[in-house]
Image 1 (cartoon, rainbow, N blue to C red):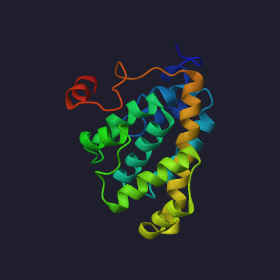
Image 2: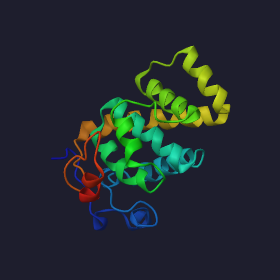
Image 3: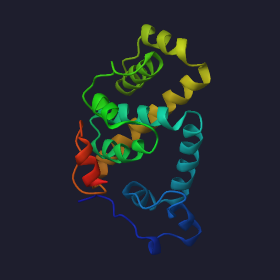
Image 4: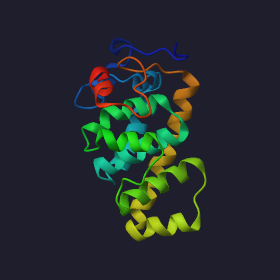
Length: 184
């Protein structure tokens, strides 16, 4: 049971209803919890969308999945297994991340995942930073770092309010195609 009520649309000021349309957010539990403070929800989403625009949808999802795995954040992993499929991340790639094996990714993505993991855990070394700098420019590195930091905080927040999963049970860290099809 969540520690923060998940608001229904009629409990949210009408000027913020646009946030909950399918064209914008849809009906995710995290946003229904944040709707207790709709001004902060709106501003947070603007910031997050700015970060999202800095990376390709695939890279963004690879980073988010890596953070969720590195932090053991089941809610975020579950959400983004569903979202990442639409952004070009294959189920086998999700299983690799969920199993802690980045070796199936090419050089630039391999380094991106390593960097995301080490930012999420606070373990960035000079070597990892130099490797990411060989593949990404400083503006991308800043965007990745801030996206990781946002999701680390989000993972902590979600755990603190005990949000339930959308779509049933936890999909698992190394989900099969069948499990994904069944849950989503």
